[in-house]
Structures are given as structure tokens and as C-alpha cells.
Image 1: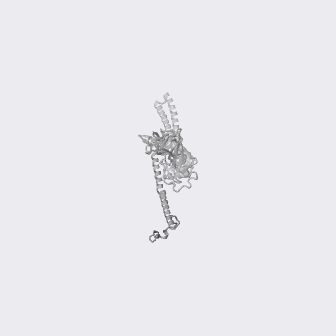
Image 2: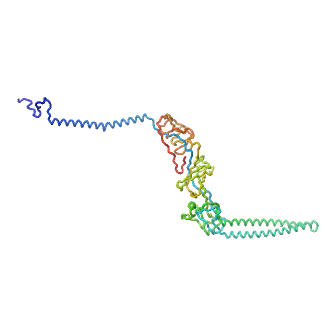
Image 3: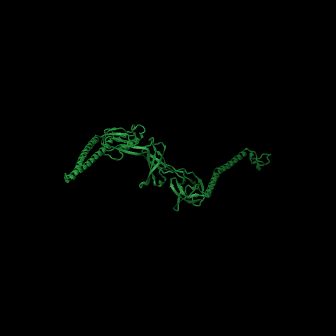
Length: 472
């Protein structure tokens, strides 16, 4: 049996009896099979992960991109649109301005002398006719006394001339009778008549002298009254340029406001409600020695107060006398004051192209001061307010103003319009549109005549109102 093949097979590889040719349950065989199963499972799991984490997300992104590209290609362009509405029933125009005193006067001396009394100071409230100061004018007093003496002397001369005239008249009357009877010659009668006529002339001349002396005395008496400096109207003392002992001359004129008056006007008026000039800052120092011939006082009436504004030429039609105005003063803590347009210059300034308008505002408590910065809001009621469109929605086509009007089918049509006032963010439309129309907020390359769009309604905010701007 040396050539038996079974003899060369190891014992461990030979099938056991009773297995009917089936593989043996050797543990080595089972371990090898398990390794192959784990390897195959790992390969499958790795393939699934590659598909889930790599190819599948990329495939989904490509599908989304393709779908979005198709939607953009086939979808209508989205355009922001607004619905046309009417403007508010009141029209407002905001213009900056400056407040001024209703009446302001500079008080000068008419009598030369020295200031003997000063009864008021900067910031004091005075009434019409109140005594402000007195001037000691001895030269003027002597002139008045001399004028009285001259008048009395001329009156005495008049009495003497009248007596001489009476004597000349009596003498001539007698001579007329005697000349007629031939007692005296005609020459003697003519001489007495001439004496009578001379007497009449002397009386008339003396009467004129008396009247001239009387007029001169009246003039000096009037000037003497100017030794008492009084207030011409009720108001506030805004400047005081003299003090006791100052030399006053009557050579001054209405030359305007001095530097002391300018520096003290606003601060003095601010103190008028309290205690006159008490508490004024140190830079308000009136001149006391250099006001010879200059103004003594400055007085201003601030109730009511004037507000002067310059209206641009394009908006002059919106301003009328009697129109209501809301005024906002810089130092009034955002409180609004009601005023009225009282007058206009009725002429456009060629340099600034503006119309000067005066607004008056009551100022009973004196809170509002001259020189304050003011924002005037002119309010005008309109029976039929105009339509408003965004300013950026108006374009020019063929030299005409048009807007992109959107119809019921979301189709765009360029509609010609006639525009009115321009408020910046919004513009009035006089004709071409009606309330409720829909227009494109802005005209881009996608907005063409006849193109259908996908409207996106937006709300347009009201126009802003910065200081110094024109606002509806």
C-alpha cells in the first residue's frame, strides 16, 4: 500500500468516516469564512457611505440648481410697485426764518447837557410815556429865559407902536376936517396921512416880531421838554449806552445799532421777565463816556413778534396772507406756536429768487426773543389734494414724463403724466393717473413697455423733514 494516495494526505485533512463526503467542522475553516464575511460587509458599508455622503448630496444640489435656473428662466420678473394715493388734505411748507421785534426804536437826545438821572437799565420792561432819564441842560434853560424876556420886550414895543398909531390916526382925522375948511394946506394933510400909514406899518412889523419871538419861545420850550427822556411805546430796554454824568449832545442821528446794543439785545430781553438787568453776563457792558450824540437807549416791542422767512420762487403760490403757520423756535423745547402770515413783499428778490414773508406770533409772556432761529411750517388746506408718486418712478421717454403703469394682467404700459411740485421723495401728479393705479416704484431694464411682471407691493414712507428743507 505504499502507492496509496490517501497515505500522503495528512491526518488532519482526511475526511472522517461517516461524513458522507461533507466538509469537516474544522475551527480553522470557520474562522476564515467569518473574515471574508466581515470584509465584504465593510466594503458594502463603505460603498453606501460614499453614495450617501458624496454623490447623493451633489446630485440633489445639481437638481435644485437646475430647477432654480429653470424657474428663473420661465418666471416673470419681480418688480416693486406702489399704489397711487392722494396727498393729505393739508399742504405744508417748512422754511427756516429769524424772529424780529415788532417795533424797535433807538432813542436819541434832543437836548444837550449832562445826564442827571437814569431810571431804567437793560432788560427793564417799560410802558409808553414812562420816564427813562433826565438831562440837565442849563444852556437850554437860559435860552428859554432869554426867549421869554425877548418876547416881553417885543410885546412892550407893540403896545408903544399901537399908541403912536392911535395918535397918528386922531391927528390925521382932525387935519382932514381942517384941510377941507381951508385952515391947513393939502400938503399938511398928506403929511399927517403918511404919518398914520407909517404907524400902521410899524404896528404890523412889531406884531410879526412878537409872533416870531413867541414861536422861538415855543420851540425852546419843546426842546426843554426833551430834558425828560420818555419811552415812545411799551416794550423792553434792549440797550443802554449812557450813565449818570454822561455828556449828551443833540447832534446824533439814527445811525443804527451800536456794538453795545448788539451784544446786549438778546440777553437783555431774556431777563425782562425777571429782574431787569440783574444777572446779565459780563460781556454786556454799556458805554458810559463815548455816546456823545449817539443813542441813549434802544427799546423793542416783542408782543407780537415778527418772523421773517424767504420763500423759494417755486413755492410762492402756496403762500397767502392770513394763512396759518406753525412755528418751532430753537430754544422752546420743541413746543409749537401758532402764527399767521400778515404780509409779503409782493416782489421776488432777483439775487436770491425768494419772496420775503412776514409771520406774526403772539408773545404775551415774552418767552420768544428777537433774533431766535425759527422753523416756519406754512399750512394750507386743499379741497382736492393732488396725487403723489415716488420721485424715482418718473422717467423721461420721448421728451415726456412717464411712469410704468401696471394693468390688471400685470402688464407694463408707459403712461405720460403732468407733474406738479417736487417734494424730493415724492412728486405731485396733476394729470395722467387716478387714485388706485399701480405703478413701478423704479424703472429698471426689466421694466419694458408691454412686458408682464410679478408685482411686489411696497409701502413708501413719508418724505423726511430736515431743518431748512421743503416738505409736503
